[in-house]
Image 1 (cartoon, rainbow, N blue to C red):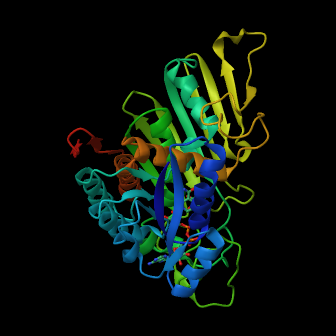
Image 2: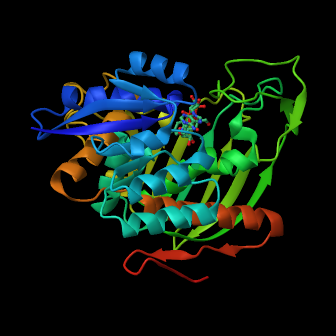
Length: 398
Ligand code: NAI
Ligand code: SOE
């Protein structure tokens, strides 16, 4: 069996999720032609790195991420740091011949996303951007229904991502509220997931119109460290200006003629990880809510006038992405499982010499939509989205 060795950069929330996934892959997907091996983890200081190595099960630790990129014993570089660090790390890792999985959004600027995509094309390595919600079995089942034509021609998609972790003005100004680090607010942080899901389920977004809003203009400063995502309050600290959006509302057109609305906010009290997708087609409808992520609601025109209505399919071993998980539907498929499936698909591509989606090209196309949204929010105008031609690597419609 081939061992695939991992160097992970960043030991925060995603460092934990990815480490868990590397342990989980052989537990769920077995027998296997490969075995992930957790070699080295990098953190901001030697102490944090050593602590993360112990906790997450890595043999080695470092405060210099370049030593991971330079280590000939490492096959995979996993980037789980704040957004502005992704480009330099990913480009260096690809140049060193590593396979790269990078957290979303691909980068904090469009130019950096373009550079990362170009580097991925130049390398022969497997690359993946970690839009893991695609891997939720109920979302994959929605795609199956759509591809089988069960809801006919797609008319529209309504997508939301609502959270409340930053609704309190005393929650600290972490890296997620700094444009120089995050790139944008709700747009890149959470709408990016909905854009990826819309691309996955419906197709390319061709035009957008949008507005953004910043409700909380300043927050108590936090210098460095992991983002506590609202779990801490910092009321006494000096305040600093927030220069990213708290909320974004968009209308979109898809290249295939469907229309939609996508919205995201981190200021919606009572909403936690409220990712919803409602898709209407000529022959039926699909509804998904991540807060009930085992369930897919479906309704079909063919059901007949006297019994038509949404019914619930509980996902499990009979559904896409579900067969390797738990033996009975509705036992509960969690966030961790989406990361295990993501890691499994990434490693399978490496072991088989193939490729995996979403890749850096998909991440770049999401960045192109984000950029059009932010420009539309400035001008108020419908804004076309340049489309990446994956064959040539060039943009159409600029
Ligand atoms: P976090 O703030 O919890 O952790 C980031 C870690 O990176 C911190 O522990 C920090 O000390 C470390 N770090 C900073 N500079 C470093 C350096 N030079 N070398 C090594 N480590 C360094 O952030 P979180 O939530 O883990 O986010 C990381 C990335 O994952 C972001 O790009 C974010 O957008 C993405 N993310 C994706 C999620 C998903 O559902 N796919 C969920 C949460 C985050
Ligand atoms: C915070 O909004 C966050 O951790 C995002 O960064 C993730 O991408 C999302 O999946 C969960 O919420």
